[in-house]
Image (cartoon, rainbow, N blue to C red; front, side):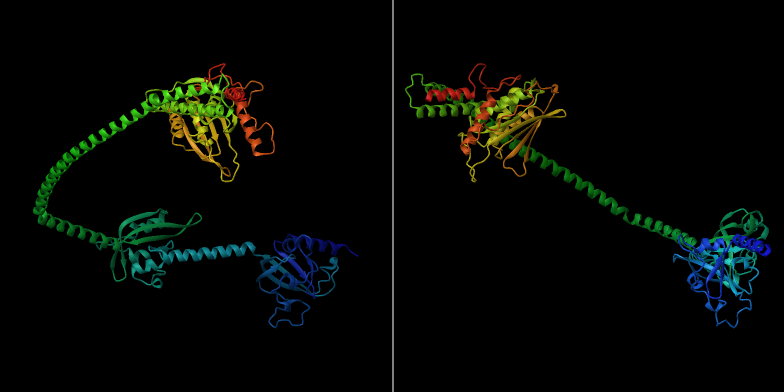
Length: 626
């Protein structure tokens, strides 16, 4: 067998693969038997095959009567089965669709041409399928753009007229036809200049060569003319603002467009405005003349009323000064009376009460010592209790007098650099003096922090703050809780926060006693600090937060080994009952008071060095009772 048909078939296949459109061959059964490369790329999805598919699966809208094996051939069909390009939707092998244009033709007796592919002499149908995906989008965009342009031209309030290179009208929008008084159909094809620009406003001829439209069509320049006159239908003059611009197709000038705005509404408004301004000026002049005398009378009346008001105000001011002077005298007398009572109260506290109280405390202490051992233990205990009560009252009076002197300005705070843990220890010691030993237990966290404060007064403030939240009244008794046992631990914690020292005091009772809290606030205020109260969620009582500036102090310093945190022990040993807890708390207070705290000054009323501490005094008293 000669190789010429094979070479011809290969050459034909290469030519078909080079075509820009998809080419599909369908046999008499409507099955695809061959396709070029473009068809495979357009119809095949990965993992599927185009050859062997039914034609109607790929082109559902294709006329099945055009398939060679159909018995229902169209009567008007071309003898060779050629059809005109028809648009329809094609379906890929994965089911997705895209728009195409299909042209078909019959291939009769294709034995020689396709012998190399193994086809028989059956009649074949060739389909040329052109992908219109981009074309359809472009056509739709062009149609949308054309519709949008038409809508813009119809909606524009300005007149728009387009001409060709000869100046003949090819485009008119409704606004232009309405301004000129024509129907749009009457203007098509007419020369624009001879129709509406043939004369100037005074009626003299306006040559075409001098018109802006002619220069735009000649040179391609734009023109903008104000106050131009167009001649509307019936030779009516229409004043307009006119603009001409060239229309180009690439670099070639193909026409011009003229836009114009009817100035008649603006001119009418301007004339109406001028007429209104003139009428307003005339009316204003007339009103000015009519009301000149009225204005003079009103001015005179106003001057008289102002003078009367000034006289009345002067009288009221004089009366008010006399009234306020009398009121000031009364307030001065009242202040002097209050000041006298205040001085009398301070004198009473400082001299008439404190001296006898000191004397009674010393006498009771001497009796309680019972050097001869003649008292019963019960009497000795009562004397000790009375001595402690008198000592507590004396200490309270001293602190109140000190606060009054600080508040009145007769004394000032004395700032020195001290360690804050020593101040906290002195404050706890002072609190024990105020509320009595064994009343509460303490949990103290006071790291070594150097601050520039008045240690004596700050220790007094902490003592009163602890006494306030401890809930011990002036008689030295604690209120009884309705629920029975109440934890009577007072927490004192100090820390540095930036440039301030923050001391938190938390106890089982709300606080706010009118004796304790003013003393604390006055001392804190004198240090330039603040005192705040916080509710503790889920716990009874209150938490006071005291903040004072560090000043010239160094702040937190490294603690010696073994003394980083001064924390009171929680309890010595639990005996299983409330009595054991109370004894444990009392022992924790004594353990703290017996501990050595380095640095700082002693609080006012503190025992001198070598004197017995609270725990030692109590032990001495118990030994005397025995």
